[in-house]
Amino acid sequence: MEILKILDTLEDIVSNSTSVPLSGKCLVDRGEILDYIGELKERVPDDIKQAKWVKEERERILGEAKAQAQKIVDEAEGKVQALINDHEITKKAYEQANQTIADSQKNAREIRLGSREYADNLLAQIQDTLNKANQIIEKNREELK
Image 1: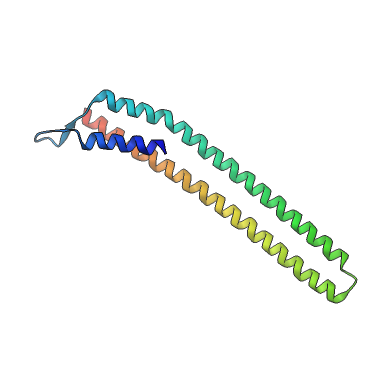
Image 2: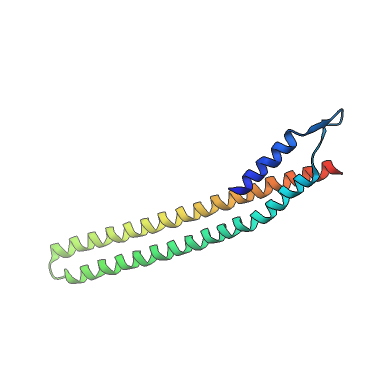
């Protein structure tokens, strides 16, 4: 992720900068720092777009899973109706239909939970990156004052 590389570079610049004796402060090239901050501002919208895409992709996957689950349920119901005349066959058909429904619901639930977790992890990474960038910017502003 480009933002993390930029933040690492900013951290290196601050870490390797010349210290001002007896003050705990350091000297940094203002222009260089501002250039990297500008790059951060340009990159953040891309990450937000990516998060939006992840959300839309999650919704698409959930929709497909629901459609697939409904299709499996409909197929199972059709099989049950076709085999209703014979008691033993009917009993097995109900068992298979129920198992198919349970499996479909389990699969849909797993897909839904997985996509939510993926989107949440991605958004958490973006939030953490933005928070770190904001802390660095605030620290640098304080040092510049």
